[in-house]
Amino acid sequence: MSFAATVLTLYPEMFPGPLGISLSGRALEKGLWSLEARNIRDSATDRHRSVDDTPSGGGPGMVLRADVLARAIDAASPAGDDRPRLLMSPRGRPLTQALVRELAGGPGVVIVCGRFEGVDQRVIDGRGLTEISIGDYVLSGGEIPAMVLIDAVVRLIPGVMGKESSGTEESFSEPLLEYPHYTRPAEWEGRAIPDILVSGDHGRIAKWRREQALKLTRERRPDLLRGPDRD
Image (cartoon, rainbow, N blue to C red; front, side, top):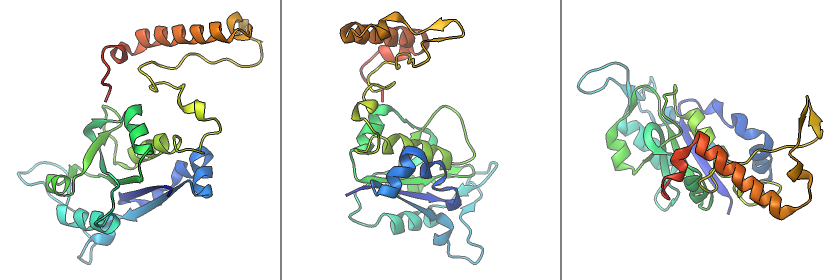
């Protein structure tokens, strides 16, 4: 059974977008994973296909209605669907490589893309949505974050990347940033490839790469070295 991603959005035309090219696009064509983008407005019941209303208690903007969104979720993920239900939200649990690996090992995901000021809390609670954030900033909607999450997950599905080891030697596969990479030409603008990388001594190369990864992590992301729980 392939990994199945269902996205609930007000803008289904945004998909597959970048997910339809390169690694994820080729894997999509091969059937290693599937993508369905569903329009939340299809679950509206009035002639205007309304999906939002003013926030209770006052305030700016609009809020996605619980009843409309719940119908959309129920239609996309009926009883017996064991895929996790996610809501892309800046207040959510940070998206980490550990979470990406966990999702890649499952049957797929159902992702709700928020818009406006947010989503009625009752549908978050009533439909068991797990809020996920891709960073400490706010975007216009959840579609781009959903693409980020799906791209990160899909590339770890067996058969998507050319070499399985590619996914195990990257930044965040362990609590370290990735070491520097080099390739031909041997010298460029007076800068040479480090001698050790052309020495043929794989033990020394592995040690050098580990040292470089530690150095970069200490300099740029010391928080990664402070504890085992990075979720």
